[in-house]
Length: 321
Image 1: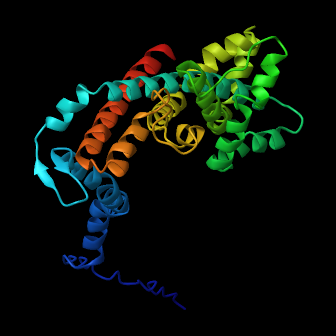
Image 2: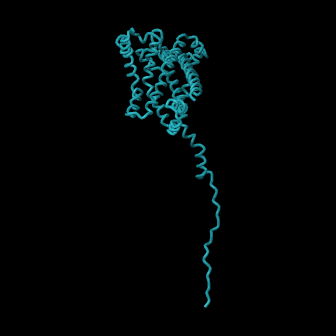
Image 3: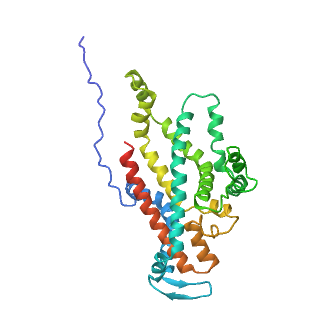
């Protein structure tokens, strides 16, 4: 008897077929198109809105500032005459002085106090959630209500501030009659409204700092003050720059607080002692129907904001390291 072996069946391997090349209208082409152009489509709404509500009004205001433009239909080309008159206008320089003075008097204490509050709220305090909510209440309060309350507080005859100062023998102060007093009152209003908001921004940035850095510094024997100076402040530099620039833009555009402090009048007192650039622009454009001159004031204020923001940026970047 003989044994016979049969060969194991072999499975045939199908021949390799090259994949067909994709046409331009295939999914691969769409993928390349999507990767190349979709980022621009995502950011297009911002630039569209900025062009309509930001860039176009800016260019149109520059065009109006070169004319003697009134509501009566007068559009007389005057070139740079409005700017020439503006730089020779004593009231314009007075309003610029008021704007910068109120800005400095309100912004510097505001940022320091906001940083101090954020440092306290970053600690393990009882009821810290309620405290964090409480400091933002002034920001959500109506500006008109804030101005009315502070107008009563700084009243000359029956104000609580003068009553408190009278306890120390200080005579009643007419807060609306002088530069220093009106600037101080308006600055207190601004600080009360915006300090908590900036403190929350500082607090969010502080909580993003890794705790390992503080633990390593504590092991090395660094005090809390040294940790704050060597760790917290350098890592808060981007946040500090953001808050300084935003505060600069808002402070140089101050309008509502001094307007309501002056009982709704845009003259800023009898000698324009607390009239800001925005109030002067509004008065010339909408009350005196001098839109060309008002547009020149608007552009001067825009350039002032740009210069002040750049100075603040360079100062903060060099000092906070």
